[in-house]
Length: 139
Image 1 (tube, rainbow, N blue to C red):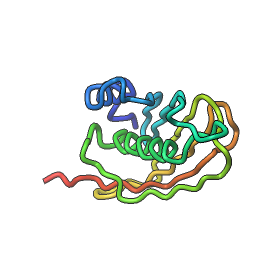
Image 2 (spheres, rainbow, N blue to C red):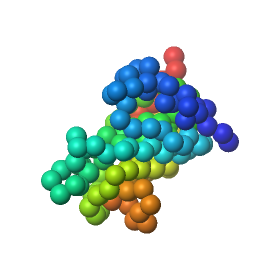
Image 3 (spheres, rainbow, N blue to C red):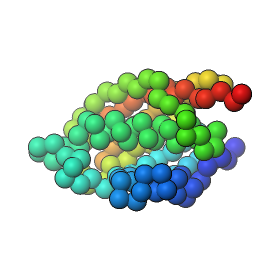
């Protein structure tokens, strides 16, 4: 199965919807049931000590999950988060952050996605999340 939305099309959607200046991350991979996004962290993403902030990680988790859903549905802007649970496992310190989202299950109304966040090149994730997305019904 191939992705119904390419990384290029997803990045174009973000640029057109939010503008390039506000698009902090880049979608680097869209495969069936999987989306990967990267962020070059700036000062606005950091806490004292150079830690990537929790809100930055949660935003990346949510966005990666959103695009993992779209690998199955195609562009569906009205898909919305219905639950997000995140565990911060270890400090997230580095310049490039990667969120890797993998579909666990998708049905007609809900999709469940698992997301790992890590610093590029790290063996272990800094945080792990499970996200549920509500999929709009086709009437």
